[in-house]
Length: 229
Image (cartoon, rainbow, N blue to C red):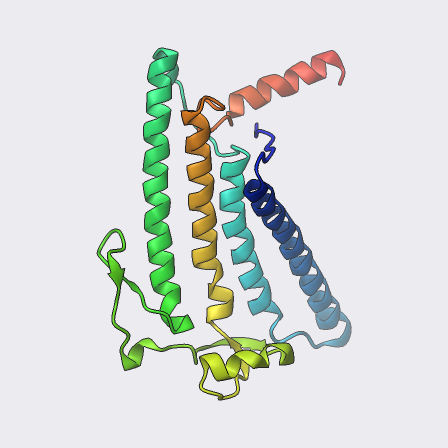
């Protein structure tokens, strides 16, 4: 049972619109590309060469958006049988500890995501084993903006990035830093959602990070059936 999210700040509303619009667009694009590929394959014995790779990237983007969306609407499953034994004040402290752990985990994921993506975009990776302590010195082999994906052709409208990222050389396929950008962006969004959820617990607007329990869903479904809803 997920909760309904209502943003109460300008930043919250902006991020919420971007997130939900992106999820809808990605799902729509995946459906359209897959449908066209099926028609071409079985109707004309051909297909979009880049279709499979494109839908794979779109699905990965959808999953990464979905991770933060699930935190936002508190749709993650949780077991609180032990926590409910304690008093409300203790439960609040435990919820804050859980929130702090989740924030630290998201920060680690963000560092790892940035370090994986950075060199593909000709940016430096961070230093530090666990948390960033600075940026590495770029070496000749650190510049990997020339790496391309396998099948997706380079759109003409993106040719303007070639002088910036590839020393003026033409891309035949789109550079990897474009689809891979979702890694640090998705982890930054996840970190934002965990910070937001922890703040709601701190200010008393929420009691925990999750409100999703399969047993409660089942009980509610039975109650609706008994009422004839």
